[in-house]
Length: 83
Image 1: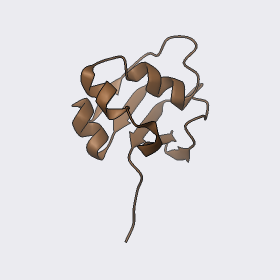
Image 2: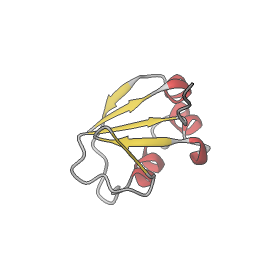
Image 3: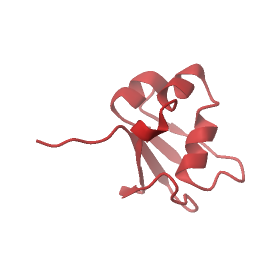
Image 4: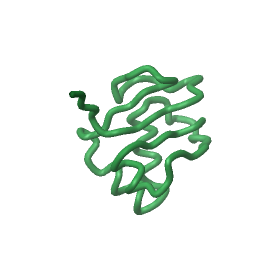
């Protein structure tokens, strides 16, 4: 699965995207975030405040408790503002 990072999430993780194979049991965006947070200090810093994260699965905005089964892409980013 491809993971995309945007804005300060990307800056803290240190890459814009990565391909990962989450272990079994990682079945929601929240579980994915928890697992990703263990990958490096940068990941841990990016995901330390989950209430400041938003996500999209296969380019559709979703809640963090949404399932990721069969997803090809998960994007993680801060809240989006418009103007």
